[in-house]
Amino acid sequence: MLTKRIIPCLDIKNGRTVKGINFVDLRDAGDPVELAEAYVSQGADELVFLDISATLETRGTLIDLVRRIAEVINIPFTVGGGVRTVDDARDLLTAGADKVAVNSSAILRPNLISEMAAQFGSQCVVVAMDIRLLGDKWMVFSRGGTQKTDLEARDWALEVEQRGAGEILLTSMDHDGTKSGFALDITRKISQAASIPVIASGGAGSKQHFLDLFNSDSADAALAASIFHFHEVAIPDLKSMLLANHIPVRV
Amino acid sequence: MITIINYGMGNLGSVLNMCKRIGAPAKVSGDLDEVSAATKLILPGVGAFDNAMKRICDLGLYDVLDQKARFEQIPILGICLGMQLLMEGSEEGKLPGFGWIKGHAKLFPSALGIKVPHMGWNLVKKTRPSQLIDSLDEDSRFYFVHSYFVQAESRWQQLGLILERIWKD
Image (cartoon, rainbow over all chains, first blue to last red):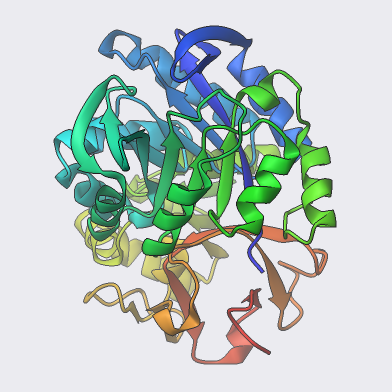
């Protein structure tokens, strides 16, 4: 049986791990290579690395950082941030990434998803979606959550699947950094509508939140940042707790 | 020395790092002379089946690899799409594979009711002894990320099965 995946996320700005609340108020969370190594030894199932500055000037540094992290980890490694072309994606894969995440560029030019899928296969293409509840609709935001789009979350999820995405990383901006639990309803809705795996992100504050997520069968994986970076929840404890509650996890 | 074949499609960095980690000297190369001289090969690959076969042919690697496999019979490890290429073909594409192993790569049928790509850590059931997998524990987990699976014509050629509710014994 496939296990539910626990995925620490490294948000990177200028070569350091940072973490904010609702996508702003960033604070330093340490050296990404050291964190990555620590997460591997604690039993993380995958690692996600998002370059949130993602400017052209920092591209070279980013590739170097991806290479250094890839050298010290032995779990699947998803890298995203500023990927605009198939060549950008290839550079990351060559540097040691296993999957590449796209967000704003895919909204601007949805064909990027199909191009990447044709070139590297769907299993390699993660579409990250940042969503917020506006009125009674969950809407997709681009450019690190700064720009509202006309896309409804569920529609966009189905479109990216149809275009060849292999996985959806769904982040509720409303929940991000709040430690109030995952956005269960919309995550479950999208997870059930899509036939590709969905990673829930945003809002993890306690072990119970992961259990709620998996018990309600809302996602295939859970991603979190601050609770792991700041040692509020340890991955081994989280996994034992999930296992004790009959959620299949890799230990 | 293991030669990891670079034909422009693969998470080469990841494969090279893993060889380093387990202490296996390895290098990445797409050079025809270097591949011809290789004594052990890894054929990695992420991407679409036809795309991969086409690139291998375009780069002139097809004949070299066929020679290494069929005549020199050196050890070759296919990973992911690289493993699918060892078969006669795939439901994903129209081009023939190398055909060193009889059988095809097939898409997970939707009737299985699992999410595709099959993604995450799963168990593998050993179906026959082999030095490749004998030392592994039965409860070892492997990371899978794929939409197609290989079905060898002869069970004898198969070392293991993904153990999910997928395959009911």
